[in-house]
Length: 257
Length: 321
Image (tube, each protein chain N blue to C red):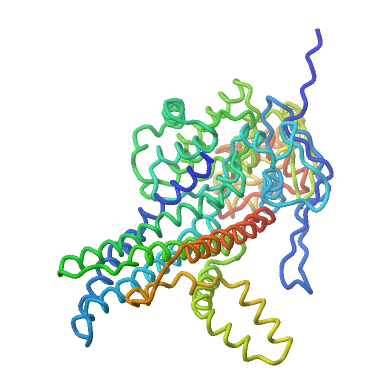
């Protein structure tokens, strides 16, 4: 466990000290300010619009930092072979992968929480109040980042170029957001083969809609009960565990020429 | 009383590796290792020599578990590299090591020390000790981004030594070092050897091999051509070619000899080692002023070249060796 934490802290420090830190600060300021400006210019309840945009921005910043971090560290670890010296130490490949994931997740968590905190302060500063499920939607967003971090790092262990890692992660995020549309396609599909293929795709992709609470936090009928919590937590951890296993096996089998 | 026979630190048995590149249905096969069998004795320094592409780095990668052999097996410190306890006793320095540039030298060594299970005061003390050993105490707090190639190489050897390894494996350890760094690195190796550490050096700097290694192995085109104690190599009396510097104005004194044309063109000529003394006598008899007599290769170099079927040649563009 100590070795996992060492790798995690090393990764976290590497990411925080790289240009990602600038992205983090700029994203918090830019997204927050832009959301505020757009909410003032739009019709309707500007505070609601500000909160909506701010949360969407926090999610976007999390994705951006993940993609950027994957690209930067692929170059260091795989292309420049910094991974060699670490894997020659008494650390297993599974520990290394888990450490990397935790380091990335810590940075992502900082981005999402930083953005959410900035948003909350702004809302309270203009005399508004936060919707009841604001904190819950931020926690769900963090869980989404956990799942995506496991996926991104697994792609990093499988893919042979940095571009592939970024593309795989980007399209997974995109398709994961479109899971409802894929479900609709399955229902409409009559050809058994295509239906089967789409069903496999549906179950392989992360269902990111499970985590999407931000669009509904002003819905007065919204209730997040124990069952939904259970479902979201179970889904995030079981999906992450399966992805981690795939990443671990891939890393164990991978040759570093 | 007879000395107890120590098990080899590394044992390669019929190791073969072929790289596959290109499309899966029409792969290009590149054999990198062909039936490598070799024992590296404990408490000795072993130098693996070879030209670029000879299979040296593949040997190290198989040894460290970075690539998997197609056939054969490797035993390292009596176990397998996949065993964490085995890796805890190994130090490894890759060729031109690359580190995340966001950390300082001290932070990097602390990280690698922590991976070896060190913590707290023991870790801090060991980091200080290693920084001192590799002469990096002063810039230890600076980020690696500001380090020169030689400083990175020193930090590289530092991370390899942080866990007090029983076996140190280095791939081209002298790369990027200036003459002082080169000497310091050599001294570190000699001290480690004296302390009982087994060294496995992958190199093509033959001078380093001669001064540090007890045994050498010569690889060529994926095949281990020869393994010999360095003392045997040095005593082998492999003939070495020489280059004799002669001023161009002296060429007239050597008319009708095979050297005249070379003297006129390059200011000297090359001769085989066994012809050195008669040739020098001949030059003296003709009152030819000799500038210098230089061997074109060291004994180890000549042995190496002979083993792989090559000879040292004078390159007029570069001058004599």
